[in-house]
Length: 245
Ligand code: NAP
Image 1 (cartoon, rainbow, N blue to C red):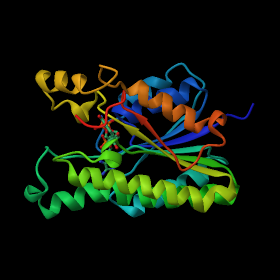
Image 2: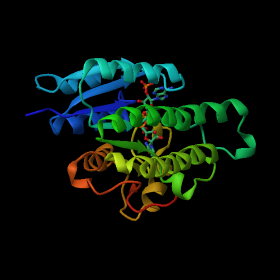
Image 3: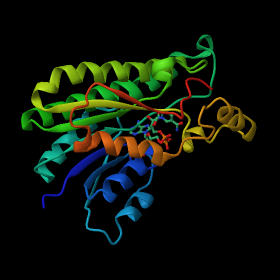
Image 4: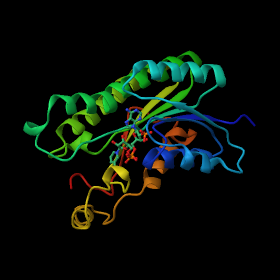
């Protein structure tokens, strides 16, 4: 049996790490990128299993890093089935009037420009081979907007528009492009919220709990699989029904 291979950009923690677990459970080999995070948790997933792990250091703010990553993939494997773009940053919540130029640039570079460049490189790879699924991790803030998260919301909304445009461009090449838009998921990114804030978030979530990383990874697993072979240009919200917190 030919083993499938997935690329997970931003794989060292939180949602990205769980997405790697999902692929390994589904029998994939995985290309995983890291930036500042360490590889221990990632490597632990593969211990005693047949799935292969390839790693590459990528700072998505650096376009050349992303291009080098795809060169390495071309060299190391014949085929790639799926690319998942997970990197994302946000700052402490504040009104847009208090956000400085550097923060705007940093958020847009990681969340949106990196996604555009990774999307372009993935599309070049997949269109040539007439096969592939690209999945961007967006956010419900990219759909509904989040107060005091204007720049983050804009970056994640841009990502949704990007995926819809790409889906139209490359559908004829059997390449699918979709987004997963999580709500509040319990990870390092949301560790800054205290107990009282978490209770408020649970209260404003129709399913009355916080999201888990495996909730997101399950949606990614579906969009990567043949079970979603007629789905492209879509956004799956994984938010327990929440539209704002
Ligand atoms: P996380 O654990 O903080 O993960 C963030 C990831 O982004 C890490 O893998 C980190 O890699 C990577 N990253 C940051 N800057 C990077 C850069 N310059 N170059 C390469 N990688 C970079 O947070 P998470 O919650 O799992 O977030 C994953 C994605 O889900 C993000 O896009 C986030 O916006 C989105 N999301 C999260 C939630 C939530 O509630 N947690 C909700 C909606 C959307 P290193 O550690 O190696 O630097």
